[in-house]
Length: 330
Image (cartoon, rainbow, N blue to C red; front, side):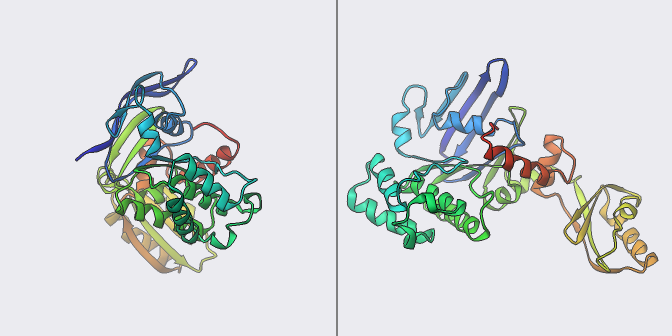
């Protein structure tokens, strides 16, 4: 299989700080490649080097057969980039933003107008085409930013945290577009801390931690490699009860996490824990609404690899959102 991206010993220092530590990986042609990691792991620094926005300290990047250090121009013309903060021109209209971007990429006039209309209709912005972007919501700006990045039909698209903070409709539209572009042959490099999003969209996932690649594989293979991260999930009624401490004290439970109206109990032996959960419910006169055993999720794998406690990833993601809004480097 041909590789769209080949990275060898990529390294980046900021003074004495080693942000990216001699990493190597490949991104195959036509795949959605997820790049995951906690805050400060080196995700955005790596993407900035791949998109020529940042010069590596050492290492080699080859994209579509071109070495970025010596022959970056042909790659830039066929690349699309959606940074974490929407890079729209607020003084222009939605239509003006798309026309300006299309001219930069030398899209012929007739094609750019047809393409702009298609994208604005796809993202539900056609009726707002003549409205200045300064009056757009965050979700509308995000959708327009993605439309600008793909108006020239790039062969390679970089997406940095495309959906956090968006309404459900906007997030769904972006995910659907990612799937459609992949079906048309586009290679997509997705930087995210949204574990569920990566699990749904990505063919393969790389987990970076402390500047080093900790794992690369398909989401399902990563889950299979962490079978020890298993759990029992139970919902009890009446829902007003708070049995967390009692459930956590059951033999074999390593960690318990409240998941909405359910409790997830991590254990090495789910089959041995099941009857204990039932016995506890009977003794407390609680009704079992649902009870199931679960294998490891990609979130569990991520937490295990990065050395975080189960149940912390959502708090980490929320903190990342806030730091990202303040322009923090990840």
